[in-house]
Image (cartoon, rainbow, N blue to C red):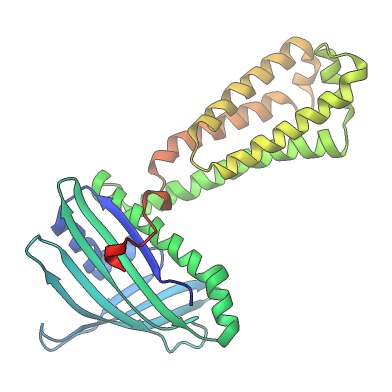
Length: 304
């Protein structure tokens, strides 16, 4: 069986605020990407386990629904708090049948180390286990870590979770658009079609005629690799700054060597300035977008 999911993050804030934002259903569902609704069920006294209902919308009017129970909380002499829970779902489309886990809050001079571990059993036999190992568990681990960083931004930077997801979605769209333009312009006009305009601009830039084809080929490969790098190094600011500089340099080169293309139907002015604008937007949004990479994902030996 694949190991359970472990996520840990340092949050520079107070224990009381972190506890409130993780233990209050109306606040919890605002930052946790895994749930769209959490509702506590009434109980007759505080000594009873707290049961709750949860739901996750998956689109097309469908939602995965389940039930859980907080098994207990405790404080030790060092101020550490622990909240254990179990959960289950009778929903026939839910991959998870039942599971359990805990949250731990460990105070330190630098803040609160907030961590979770949970694991579950799956439905659908071997197919369900394969789906879980290959897709579902990695996705759940990422969603947990991404959500923890979203919570960290809420507490440390007073950035509401709704603003974080808006910034993250906009940043993703801008970054993918920039990478797409780099890859497309390297692949289609340079490698696939060897468009005459590409050859002509290289010629007007001073390259010998017998080298034009190879220069265009090399330029296409470099553009494709640069676009791929923008996707691989997802939060690298330098690649966005490089895009701005290269677009300005390319625009200046066309203006000096091939000014006729500046007034063409589809010209470098609109393309390059749009790429610059997208890069600036991505740079502005980057600090406000969440990332799973701020979290530790390997369970320490003392937590085994």
